[in-house]
Amino acid sequence: MWVCPKCGREFKSKNQNHFCEADKSETIDEYIAGQAEEIRPILEKVREVIREAAPAAKEKISWRMPTYWQGENLIHFCAHKNHLGIHPGLITNLSENILKRLENYKTSKGAIQFPYNKPIDYELISDIARWRVSAVDV
Image (tube, rainbow, N blue to C red; front, side, top):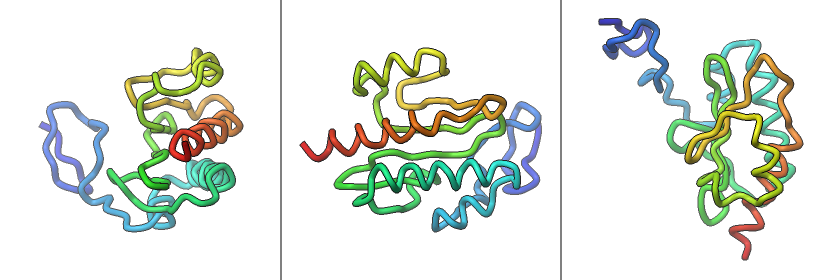
């Protein structure tokens, strides 16, 4: 068993990736400040891009992630060890254009992984956020 030194939770695998119980940020500023120094500029840029794409959205923490809300959760983002996670809801609901642009990324039902070892496509993140705004404004 491995015990997380931050939160004390026990896991079968050593250094298991998890949402640490000690990481209970109440604001996006706190969330970003709590991340690794080399990741913070990426998170700040993502925040800026989403704010520009969804200017009427409210910032909050939901599911322990920075979240933009406009009548519903539009988009979340979060830092992982090796990638930036973008969570825009069901991936299959995104536009065909965006889905084509996601072909080179690892995705799941509701998440997109942007690896840190490649340039982050901030324009794609902006387009996803704008599309989500248009989907809730209908």
